[in-house]
Image (cartoon, rainbow, N blue to C red; front, side, top):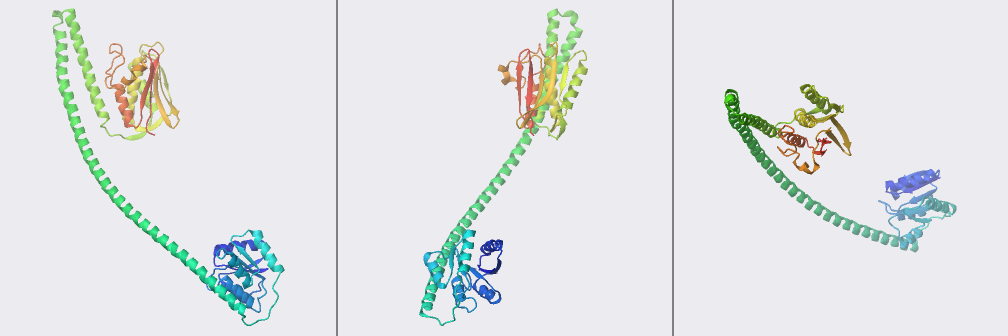
Length: 428
């Protein structure tokens, strides 16, 4: 059948059209009553489904005009509305001549049932007649209801305008607050940048002074050391025949301590350089670096037999010079502390723990007591005597500073006589 739908809401019209076309009906669409009357003039329509609130001509007036028409007065007419939904609205719709009154949204089966009912009970043809007193009363009721509905919509519109005005005021206030916050943030950023520039300049000045002091201190300390070392050596060489055994021993001790003092000065300079040097991040294979360092240690002491285990393809990002220095200190310690072991073993490897990668250097050497771990990374803190194992005690402090500059952390585990392991992470 050809069915006419009158509705100014495109979405509602489309949904109803799809529903009816799925049942095999042919649908004609109109945006209001005026368009609907034009369709009725030119198309053979079997039924009309109309909204009520529409521009130019609403659904009530459309129904009234259909019932007055000679050609369409007997068409099945169904109201389908979401605005006029009260019982009095439905009563007026039936007085206008509607066959059925549905409220949106209605289930599909209810719409189809109402359409079938209207088709089964068509209006009988009636001759055209003059307007009766009943028609006048009906149109008066229609006009009053239309005015009331417009007043309701006007009140709703006014309330919506008031809400919109309040919302606009809120938005304006928030916008002003946002501008103030942005201005305050801009001032804070400018102040922060100024302070950063000042602190950077102060830091650069302090670093320059520290660099000058380090070189001056190193020079001033080394000069008397060279004198002590030189005169002691000359005294031992030129006057050895006139010295007692104790005198020679004392001179030997002086020479040993001046040598140790030179090593301490060199270590202090190295520690001071670590935090000042510029880092250049590149891809570096720590496994290859560790292997090269161990080969150098083996070449320096070819008589030692040490089992070496190095994990392959341990690639990370970092400053190659600094990370090599860190591994040199760790592996040199392992080499040193396994010197008295019958079957020495040194291992470099990597293990994954949750989201971070952990690198380690492990040996089965002298080890250390875990009760003294707080002293491990302090400058010149030693857990073994210098007579037992040589060194200044600055190596692990150097390693800790290098790892910290790479955004990582380091810790150690050990057992006396069984070995030690040092673990560290790097910023990923």
